[in-house]
Image (cartoon, rainbow, N blue to C red; front, top):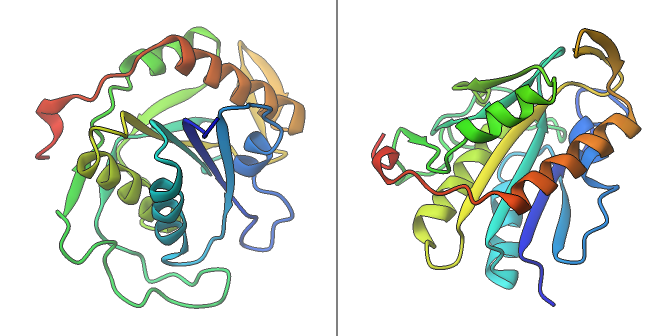
Length: 209
């Protein structure tokens, strides 16, 4: 069976030993999912995701990144610009945009409000965010939303969620909780159960943001 989901996380960056996004992804045990660890290197996530999409044609792409301490962010806007920031190879971006022919920004067309409410109901501190950071995560977000718009017959939904950094603390139901491997595995497994039970339909009215 070819994978119907592509789930991505990132390698550690900025001198860290772990990246919470990959720690959440790598322990998933799914027969119908392809798990990919992306490098924190300009252009590589776009190249690799497009390569995997062309080969396997998944109907869902779920990308996770490492974001702010204390909360989760569901990202909703992908901007077509790059920060002047070095990647893990020490290189600055070759160009200042994610796609030369792309729109200045893309509003994510997969509906996220129900997911947001679901995660809040479970006690997770989660926000709907409009700032993906202008770094490799934003490149990835721009890539997957562009793929959705170009391949509607195949690709049905894309999501990008920033997780709190590995081994930081956050409040879950008024209780301090460590963002460790067990917690991240539980979060990712619960997220996929929800996605499996809910159809998140693209919102056509947001396409021309």
